[in-house]
Amino acid sequence: MEEVETVDYTKEFDDLPSGWIVLLETSAEKALEISLSTIRYLIDKKQYIGIVVSASRPYKNITQLYQQKGIDTNKILIIDCISKSQSINLENAGNVLYLDAVSDLTSISLAVKGSMEKIQGNKFVFIDSITSMLIHNEPTVFARFIHGVLTKMRISGTSGLLISLERETDKDIRAEIAQLCDKIVRL
Image 1 (tube, rainbow, N blue to C red):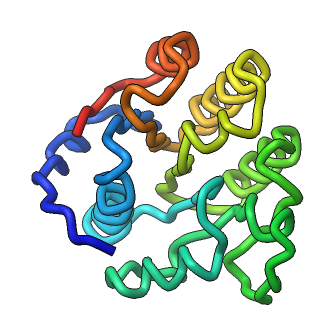
Image 2 (image 1 turned 135 degrees about the vertical axis):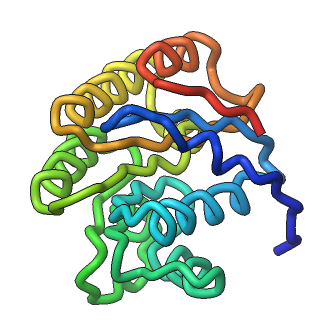
């Protein structure tokens, strides 16, 4: 993995309201590094617990990346939407929920809702990535799904972080998501 120089954008997370929702837009080349550094910042500096919805990497790969970056995986619950559909051996771990597929939006929504209810204290849901999820779902169905999830997050006071690849996300979907966010950060 090539190291990408990151600009200190953590100030973007200061002065946000409780239960904030931020859309990070970036290039494919920077997406992984930005995701990792943002999650580390939220867990280490802001003392959040993370719920990661992974539509692009299996649990084993994610945890290896987090450990390499010094991210405390005990403070993260991973909703793995990849491993089962790819017939990957599933590791038994207390911080992972394996779902059948990225296209099973109902199960993803229920898993996010259940996780938000179980975890006490400051928490965030990180959806990685909108662009990957749109590959497996019809845009109008996905728009309803993301609207529902973000609304549940607002009601429960859970913060949210979404990542999208610039110029690769459907413009109508982006507009729908953008109106539900407190801030859009382009990196």
